[in-house]
Amino acid sequence: MQPFRFGPFSLAPDERVVWRAGKPVALAPKALDVLVVLLANPERFVTKRELMETVWPKSSVEANVTQAMYLLRRFFREQECPIAVENVLKRGYRLVLPADPFWDEAALEPAPERIVYRLLVRPTWYGATKNRSGD
Image 1 (cartoon, rainbow, N blue to C red):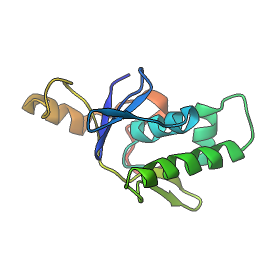
Image 2 (cartoon, rainbow, N blue to C red):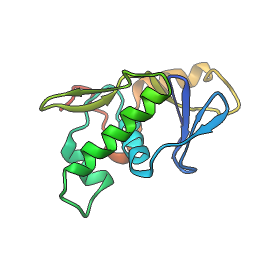
Image 3 (cartoon, one colour):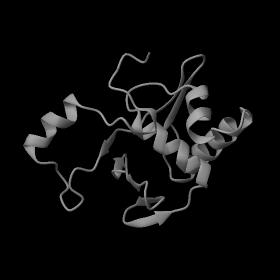
């Protein structure tokens, strides 16, 4: 899975590490899984049901999502990013920090031809969709 850059952070999902300023920062495993789902679904709300199906497919305990969101929000508060996850009743959760997949890990800016691709096609892993309407 592609690494992400979001706000002052970067995340390599395959390595399961969140980085800030070149240093790894600790994040609970399930909170990290929720973060990956939110990053893979930019600009749309992810419902509690979607999170349950993706992160806890064999469980029906909704408290798992609540606990993971608490840990994720605490992580961002400790990193001085207090408003990083938005929750709208009956719609779901979404990451407020701007997020982009890395196109070339060695380069800070994506190549111009890749910018067009990034704007037109969104990743489809972890339940991401090309539908931006939030449905």
